[in-house]
Length: 364
Image (cartoon, rainbow, N blue to C red; front, side, top):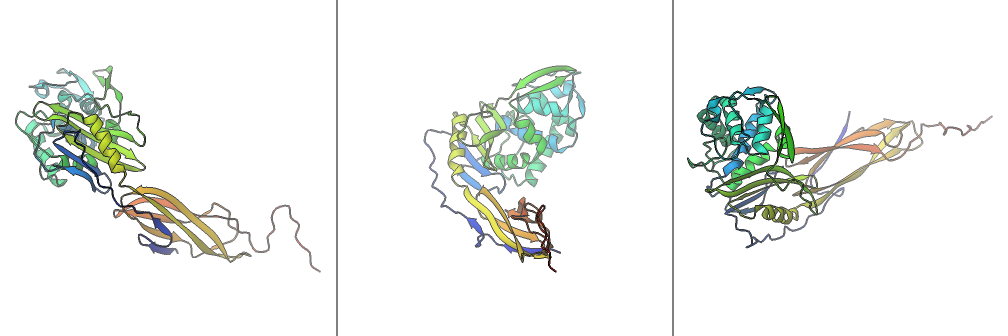
């Protein structure tokens, strides 16, 4: 049997330090056509500018292609490259040849790091049998993700047939994709070794934000893109004090600096949240009536949390400092953020028992 205590948002024991969101001014030094900055966990907008404008998104389209491959559950499958997969491929390549063999995982690596259009086409044929069928899969998935201003045509992002999306939709897609462990692993790689027909080769990520020396946090993905029609496109993911910030810029000539700037100013919107409490649990068979327990954790979040405490209504002595006597479940945005142990802060001896080495009193 547990004692269950619900602490709603701000209580005497849950200190939420809230600061007013600063006004974020758009810097005239960045000439992006569209900018969207989003918190990955809550999908809350941190900054926006022309986020629903239809634009070509170039090779950032490959985010959807890789996401679908990672969701397929067949990343270890070996693919034989066909001439049909390579038909009309142009632009950036891994330079696959008909007859080559490569795993679906390595195709994803080649697609996301080296931006191989041949890899993207091979993924499309592997998952759907044709480019048209794969485009249908891309668009049906986009619809399920509420990407309401998106129409994909190619798996690579080549835009002669005028596919389109918008900054908001690409941020939404990226937030979902980064929740997939295989996807997030691939896009965080600065370099990787792939094997094509038994031959190993090292490829390097076009995303220069990876490995940037930052004052706080680090970039952990996700994809670059460029065509003459789209201009420079970039989607990034930045880890900041336990959070992930998604940033999308479309048609932004100075995108490396822009992503550093926009993510840094949006970090100011995260508030320090101290999750803590002191609990007294009754003891049985002890000289002390209760044992004191605590928990304490600091997080940086966009809003308040809900805390649910589970602990025993009483415990039998002896109790040792550090014994787990319950658990705290922290909810954020209606999802479990983390679980914290409720631990004894002190030793509680059993009634009548002495510490080791101390003689008992004799009455008579």
